[in-house]
Figure (cartoon, rainbow, N blue to C red):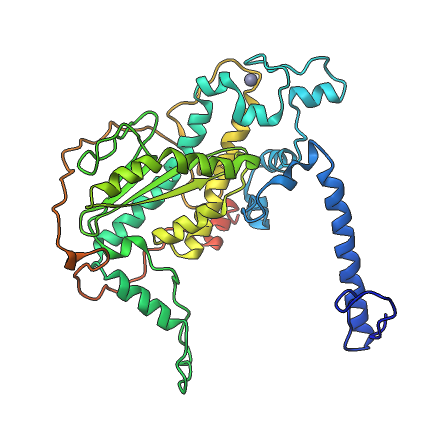
Length: 411
Ligand SMILES: [Zn+2]
């Protein structure tokens, strides 16, 4: 391969090598061959109707964590299910028929003609009516509630900060002024995006479960709709609605649009009060463990650091595949024993930490008060308050070393 172009193709169509060293040439050739091979494999995968379904999944989504730490702390059967489910290669009725083990591919539960993995995980009417999908949804929701409740408690202990000021400080820490030098040892700020919860310290949280219904706070607006998570603060006059969905990976974008459409009227009604400012976030956790990009963004926007949000996404991914695995294993069984025993993972990705949680009675609505109307000076974000303390949020995640030691104790 030479630097001189020998074909009639225009500039940029030939890989240019400025250096003629053999090492550089070898790297270029290897990279070109790898890219060419990957393109061939991808083109082949796109043509596979069953095994190539993953090519339709959103590229920005986070896959299930297959790091060494996850592999050695997760049950092998679960890892096997996750890997095979991504190419639809599990022992579902349609695949058993395809492989010649059976003659029919009907669903044992709802008698649908073609019982695929997609059908078992998200589309079976019998499983839906038996609330198997609700159990998976509420398990994921419970884990989000645990983390968000801790976050809210952290911010409610701090002094409220003016949102505009916080944003400016964060912006300034990203740049070095002309003529100045960056101070040695100065650390990158923990959070680049200003937190929504930072501008108030009277946040209230309400989470809607199937076994513990939570009405929308009537002091904000009267509605029969019940978003999964409602966070509101009288001080900042912000209402945060979070809607969780656990769809099939190929339908994540549609699920997001469906939820946004569902709550658009409610957002309009809240805005019409001219008191509250509504914000809707949709969170999509795929049934096979893929976590939508909007999920991580939502957590960071709420106030989690990027690493905390990443750990939470991994945790949710782990929970959803455990639940999907249970749903898959029960696709031949008409009875369903799970209900209120939601799966909650305490910080680490371990099977031993699976804790059944019994839901308590719903809280009363007495603590909800109508917010007073405020004048223009106290507009959004202009919350009076002293400088917030700089105490870092309490670390709720155990260290990796501790998790390893807990899992594999020394003898
Ligand atoms: Zn079915």
